[in-house]
Amino acid sequence: MNGRKLLNGNVATIFDKNAFNPEALLPDSKFNATADRVALGRTLFYDSRISGNGKTNCGSCHQPGKAYADGLKTSKGFDNKFVDRNAPSIMYASLQQALFYDLRAPSLEDQAADVIHNKLEMHGSMDDVAKLVATDESYKRDFKKAYPELDSISPVYIQNALASFVRSLNPFNSPFDKYMRGDKKVLTDDQVKGFNVFMGKAKCGTCHFVPLFNGTVPPDFQRTESEVLGVTVHADWKNPVLDKDPGRGVHDQFPQWKNAFKTSSVRNIAKTAPYMHNGAFATMQEVMEFYNEGGGAGLGLDVPNQTLAAEKLNLTAIEITQVISFMEALTDAPE
Image (tube, rainbow, N blue to C red; front, side):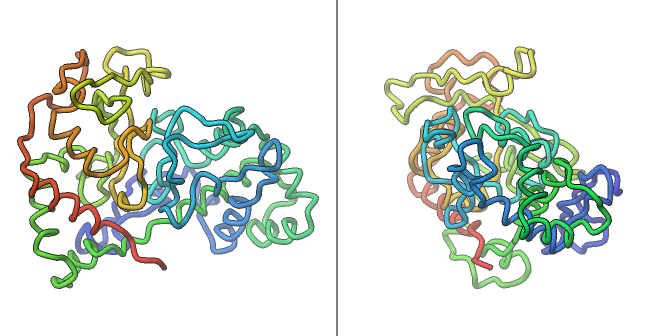
């Protein structure tokens, strides 16, 4: 492959539509996406038969109209019970070096299996999904089109089909993208000012790196960061309560990872409320206020390993409005 390099070396700028290769992290070219594999993955994505009770599918928590989030504080999983975390958008998920808020999955294929097997989410079995595909006439036909070289259906290719669909969700066609490609009329003056505040005084760009606006670190985009923000359980700045979810600390037993969470992309953020891993903040205004206060430590909570600077940003109300306006310009147009 290409040495796990997400950034294509033959593009003119990092803002070109094809600047990033969503298949860069695949271990073998035999798993590369094709139109038939994406189509098979899309069908599986919305098929509730892949869950343990036949009532839940991937699209239950990742809805196209909400930029593949679900609009809930925390998602409803198996048997309609709420899980512990908010469902993030899966758009641009392929442009991260690890998945889930706690970065426990090294690939989209692993993520697909994790969700299907998770007893709180879909409580299914990849082996059962493979049997479904092997016995359903429509699926058998679609699978043969997607993987004509195979004589049998195994779970790894079901995972690959689902991952291929997710890797297709990188449109890069927001007003910001169009502006950076030369259409200087597509952003308002406030949105341009908001971008400058985002990258400057507000320091958002020190964690949400341009142009992906996630935690995948330029210039080589070989590492995806997590941060400790001291996220609270609600947007009450006078009586803040620290969220107890250990985040990455569940899997990585080091003090610096306690309460650490993946830096998600703010692309399409206008469609993915509520925010943070626990859905604690209902609006972008609340998110901005939290950062303006210096996160949990800035609010006076005991977060000794917080990676977000605890100093207040001292953003004005106008500057916050401008940053929000800019982030709204990161909303992709329907394709």
